[in-house]
Image (cartoon, rainbow, N blue to C red; front, side, top):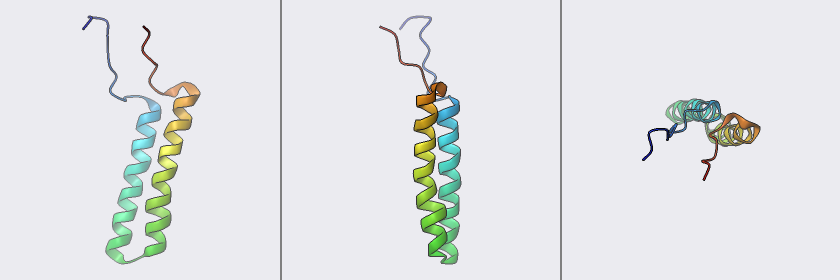
Length: 71
């Protein structure tokens, strides 16, 4: 491995945004299950998880994700 190679391990704005949104979604989903609020589970948990994935992909496509390795 070259001295100049560096893998950022997903430390990009796109990755962090997706992870933060998904963590919030899991927190809301967990709270919803504990209190028995199924609409909150489906909207705050499941739907927000999908939104987090989409937000990360859109940000990555906008240039805020990891850059592809050059050959």
